[in-house]
Length: 321
Image (tube, rainbow, N blue to C red; front, side, top):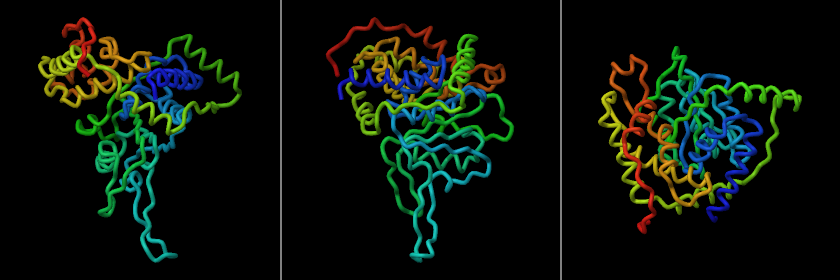
């Protein structure tokens, strides 16, 4: 598939999703970039901002199989990956697949499940496979996780460990809509006279896979590769940081910025693409010093400081692929 086709399809997908989600185009572009980069996305914000609706909408317009799992303290690993059940008709054990065997899985309030259940997602998220009773089962492509968590209410929750947070390509916050946007939400609800929003399918699973594969041909200039590495290295030396972003953070930058460039209509990455995805790609990979955490500092703030301090390269395309 040509990159121009990917850009055209991406615009159509975003336009259709915006029929359900009002006034969040920049955040939706980031989410689509994450999915096109074959990455998992963590939506972190207060309840009622449409996180579940966004995941469902992307599944509808891309033709991907969708499963939603409400994470609770009593959720078991087998509820996620599946289990072997004895079938009395055949007098043998039969494997019943869990929700990870869908293309797009919504892990709603992922921090409310026990660490054991959270860990059950780890192999699936990283390796796109699960091992059950000594047998490895490959997940169908694509396999993408969109998880949500509430950053305010921590009672009865189990914070995700850094190793699992690192598996999310992007962490995105939506924020409240502005006044006109919220009025638009009310107007659309009154106009359609029902809660449900009927969305059209824009692409199918095969086309979406072709879009993901096309992203690999996006050019990343050598100067931008150094810029990305310098940004990540700067997080490690920041005064507020105990543990900075790892090389996986550099990979996240290059993967997300390539997809963001195509969504923006380019076949090459610019410094603005890197800056646009940097907070979402790096903020959750940073561990702050305890004193800074108590003061309310965040990894996102560190990334913004780094973006202001690391010189932006003069973008010139080189001949190195």
